[in-house]
Length: 313
Image (cartoon, rainbow, N blue to C red; front, side):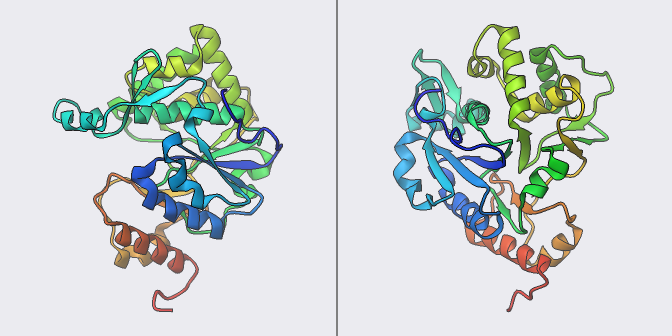
């Protein structure tokens, strides 16, 4: 890794990792506030942003939150492509989000770059577990090390689904190919959610295996793919490659995510009643056309309902 190495000076415990950017600054502010109120103080929060945007995020730095430039996490340099490329979105949806160029002028979509950042930052972490927290989620209950490492082992979310979409099946097969693992014909599982926990040791084992098989650094492997899911890479590694007993499998995630629709604040009591005790966070996907104030109100009302507090209080 170039530059700093977040987490190298500490050992054990857990680390929250958020990769974000200026376009999601207001969403991130909601997440940061919820972390400060609900997450145990000994759990560190590392936030990775484009270097040019560091000044926008520095106000969130604290004794337990470190703001890091993505250029100091990635082992290669990137340059943001002109924003005018978004006007080409009529040609391809990928042009709607930032596009970067490597020093070799290879184009990299922002979504793929964030996956490379997640992988590299997890490799650098000295904490036992890394929990990936996107900007569009918020904690609504206390998060402790017992949630992240139940029984002393990192939480591992994997759940069967009745139907696996073609896209998810493709990610699973791709992960199996990169890892050199067998995938059953009847494979129907998902590993995708918010607040996903990785064992740092198993993530490094996954990285090492992929790099050895490919003969290239992990970031080069990731960016050569048209699309990839880091969560399927890790999930297939844990279930099809890793030895038994290294994680604590759970069929339910730590976050309750609303992937579609636009729930209203008035729905909060019902939504809270449907949440499991395992759910310590909620997320409304950032692509949902919901104004920030309404999103914040929804999160606040769910939090109040879970605490048994009237919204009028």
